[in-house]
Image 1 (cartoon, rainbow, N blue to C red):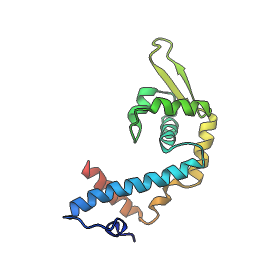
Image 2: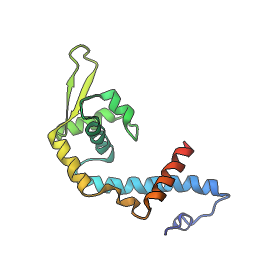
Image 3: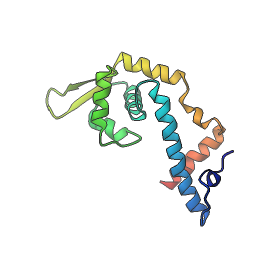
Image 4: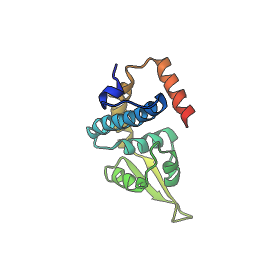
Length: 145
């Protein structure tokens, strides 16, 4: 088992400070692993999140709804979707009644990519945790917010 304090060669005034810094450190560690993981599929973690949202919806969604559902809110979500369109993983179309509204849906290629990603098992970063530990961790993170 790793020791965050040893990893960064530091001590802390109390456990709350240590926990907060450990959350930030772990977040960056997870982000680094995810960036590397999704690189092999030619997308970013944020683009994966967009595809996941669209698959879960099962229908087209307004761009604004996708932005609201994203785990990591991104001011460049439209640019992320542009790249997914170029890769033919999603498609967009304008609302007939309001040109300002844009709808997005996942394509067959997007669904196939998600199947490949799912088959490779994205949750292996949490292999050291039991189901109960993962639930407790999730509950504690919810409690912080």
